[in-house]
Length: 113
Length: 110
Image (cartoon, rainbow over all chains, first blue to last red; front, side, top):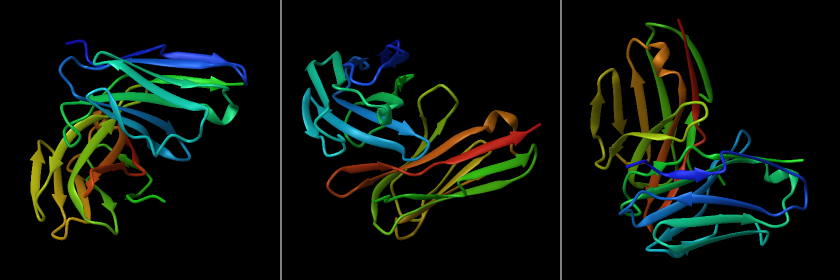
């Protein structure tokens, strides 16, 4: 298996633009997680899906952030409009279940100018 | 609110030295995991501990889960440059709330 795949690896955009991050989880995994990592706040859980259904989105910072999982093999995290404070590395992870080992993708480094 | 505090935040040591990093919480964990993250990559699981007082060894790494399941430690013996990275603990709480700690950035100097 190729592992968790994320795209793009790097994204530079201007404030106010829409940003869409993509994730392909490991085949057979039922849980998918989106995280944001910054020096100041560390690794923060944004949202968690189980069997394609959002279970816990309490970590989503505000309405500018939205996430979807239309099927078991694809998820998106969208920021609209983007702001400089959204600059961070965004990770997608998948696992067999909520309690199990999480397999992380390589991350998307987002810079909003 | 940061539920999991790790210490120290930064650690720089010489190759061959021993070190211990800590993960502490005021809440009880259902289980706890340790991950290592290298620059430009995502975290990778090292170990999962589930029983209070449990000790697990992974080559030169020793992981201990506190008796009360509120804290954990990672001890590295004879550190090597390849151990350099960010060490993260992650705790699963009752109600299936899963949180990562603040992280310890380790640099091992050859």
